[in-house]
Amino acid sequence: MIPAAFDYYRPKDMGDVVALLQEHGDDARVMAGGHSLIPMMKLRMAEIAHLIDLQDVAGLGGISVESGQITLGAMVTQHEIIDSDALRAAAPILHEAALQIADPQVRYMGTVGGNVANGDPGNDMPGLMQCLDATFTLVGPDGKREVAARGFYHAAYMTDRDDSEVLTSVSFAAPKGGYAYEKQKRKIGDYATAAAAVQIEKSGGVCASASIAMTNLSDTPIWSETAGAALVGTKVDDAAIAAAIAAMQADIEPVEDNRGPAAFKRHAAATVLTRAIRRAWDRA
Amino acid sequence: MPKKMHIELTVNGQSHEFLAEPRELLIHTLRERLNLTGPHIGCETSHCGACTVIVNGKSVKSCTMFVAQANGADLTTIEGLGTPDVPHVLQTAFREHHGLQCGFCTPGMITRASKLLEENPNPTEEEIRFGMAGNLCRCTGYQNIVKSILAAASELNAAKEAAE
Ligand SMILES: Cc1cc2nc3c(=O)[nH]c(=O)nc-3n(C[C@H](O)[C@H](O)[C@H](O)COP(=O)(O)OP(=O)(O)OC[C@H]3O[C@@H](n4cnc5c(N)ncnc54)[C@H](O)[C@@H]3O)c2cc1C
Ligand code: FES
Ligand code: FES
Image 1 (cartoon, helix red, strand yellow):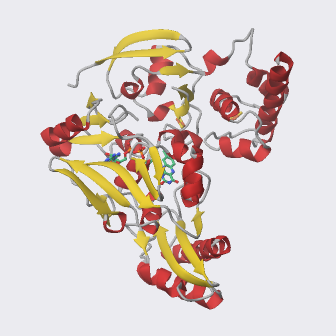
Image 2 (cartoon, helix red, strand yellow; image 1 turned 45 degrees about the vertical axis):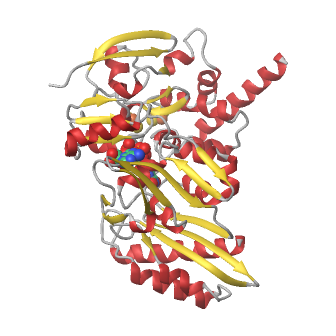
Image 3 (spheres, chains in turn brown, red; image 1 turned 180 degrees about the horizontal axis):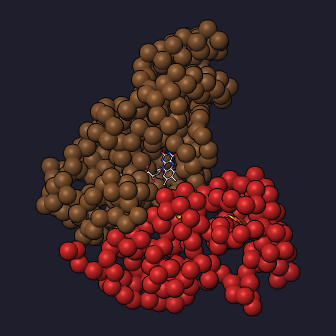
């Protein structure tokens, strides 16, 4: 499994990265940890003439947790997310989710930027970032812009990012209340058959707000606004959970693949979401 | 035709310089160029962990890294952990506790386990199973691999205490 030949670049400066992307257009691609890209290149599903390794580019690392605002540099790895006590205290759902991604070796290499920029519906971070209402910062030839995670995904591998842009960071307000990331997979290290990210706030014994996002059940992650709304104002009892599940089912569009037929995926989606809502509510 | 690159690697304390195409996979560099055949190719698809080596302090599946990415890095392979005369504590523990049968997965298992014990010197059985989840074994059923790593951990901890 030898990939097609390429020219390799390891710039230190974001300006040089953008210049290379502009010069080579479609023939160039950035690489972060390479753990989605290299498997595709080995299968020759991706042939990239100019490969730009981001590992030495300044300013893409670091986790910052400051006055309720969290920012992750694009090159922060899943291992670093799990390892950060400050992040775990401020946004424990990230810790819970990152532990369910891939396996230890992959987590040393896989980055948050690569995971959210990739556009693979199987990736776990995009749905998670939609649940948290995160913002992605992109840098391109025209400078910097910010895009909401909830508006970033158009179709499988089609995102709002232009080919000449680099995703530099992910930021969001520290979530409040209870949380859960629940994932059904065939084996450890597998992508989700279905996964649910839930954040719930409780006030006076009723649900004050709820955010729900689903993974690998459509060609994009699905933030189900109506599923969250179905819980608000309730005591999150069985009837409210059933209403949230029904609302979520109306938003997803699973298709049959090697993880099972669509009906099975709907069953798995209902199961993971029920568990996630219950756990998040208990923690709220 | 893309140019070859000048590559520098330190592997098991020894430095190497050579020209290689950037697309060369690190596992091929190690096995075919440097004759370090400890790291194995099991799946070639980033799943089995037989190719695990340590790159700048991280456990990495070397079938999923280009030699160009590793340029300048410090690497450790199973050959750098111990020798037949002076085996690593993990190597002895795997032998004593029957932590291998055919042995194909063993170099990756031990290289990964060495990093796991460095990060968590006192792992529970559950932490070992979770920390070793990137390494597949088709023979042992994992039971004796976990036992071997637990034994190596207590051995290392006892040695540390004795030294203090
Ligand atoms: C065995 C295995 C199991 C896995 N299991 C899971 C899983 O359960 N859940 C999961 O979510 N993922 C899983 N992954 C994927 C893994 O988490 C990837 O590492 C991650 O999806 C991509 O991160 P990366 O840094 O490796 O990106 P790369 O592979 O380097 O890049 C992926 C794509 O994103 C683009 N890109 C990367 N960084 C940027 C950036 N900063 N700006 C713009 N574009 C960028 C690249 O051009 C490329 O197209 C698994 C991978 C393997 C090999
Ligand atoms: S050969 Fe690298 S993970 Fe299997
Ligand atoms: S001992 Fe045979 S694969 Fe592990």
